[in-house]
Image (cartoon, one colour):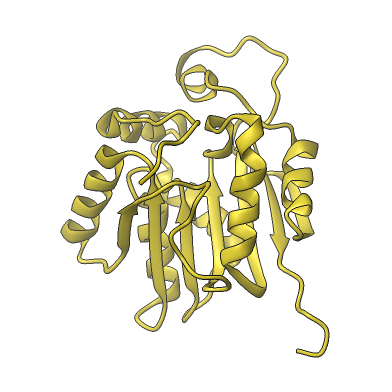
Length: 210
């Protein structure tokens, strides 16, 4: 795996604790809300880019069922190790591997759904477009890409929110521009309902004559 220009988070246990605090113990509801935005369906093939400790990928697998598949990639070996441990403990069949968002190790048009949650703000602006292009490449025609990240904030947040937000943010318009610049069509966008987070849902166009 080649080096990434983005920030790699290695403290997997700390990340899980921060997420639990950030969602005030409502992680399951938070993840279900994100998956409902896509929405992930039984039989879908799903990719979680920057999967962290795997919780969203595991939740997605429950949505797509036995006929669906879920893969999760992250640049951090510590995150992948914890994600694999979670999946084994919960008896869920999810494929996790260490890989870069800028160079996804999958063929073109493999996935029905591609997820990117609180990941793009860790990537330098110069590399974000490459990440978006890669997500657009691996999603099927008609497939959906959901990007969720922190928006710009003008107040002085402290505590748990500040810990998540300290690495940066992506303005909603910038996130839309990233996905549309990668050849995707915006379907919907707006706040997720969680403090400071916004989403963009986009789709890969279906080629004419198909």
